[in-house]
Image (cartoon, rainbow, N blue to C red; front, top):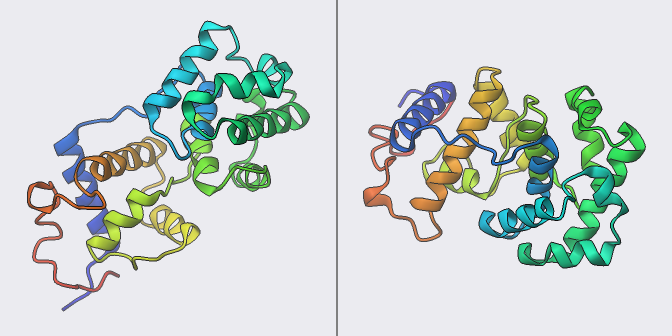
Length: 226
């Protein structure tokens, strides 16, 4: 069977998901700082818990880089408790805020003005900030062109035969960037749609018969992807 262009398959996938779920409007947050904090706090928890923490920070007047950095770590950890792993996450938040203060004078605007690739490398040097979190900050908080890969991405694409089940983050991120048009809103919407599909249908125990992708790719039976 002839190889199917990956770009065509990814376009089809996006169109199916957008038609089924509609625009997702990610990422929830009223400011770049709120989005960046959400990206750090959402590790190993669900968004409802993170939303509780962000609301608490707002109510206390602490949704400010300088105020959070000045807050004793024990007090910050207590506020972060609903997000789980609160002591670890307090350290990670502090690490990010110290990076922001030292390199960018605490300004998200200055951070957003940095070159994307060098900034990504710098974020990955922060202890506790991995590729998924760094790319979430870049894409959603700073509107920079990168693609966020997560467990849902690997699960969905491997189950449909597009990638090996065990793949590397950087390889898959680069693959998406190579195949998709360089459009930040597309990257944001695509990732959000994959997350929604993963939550509702492509679970560890998948709901294949009712999944909007149950016939995609059409006639798929181990076809080669170019």
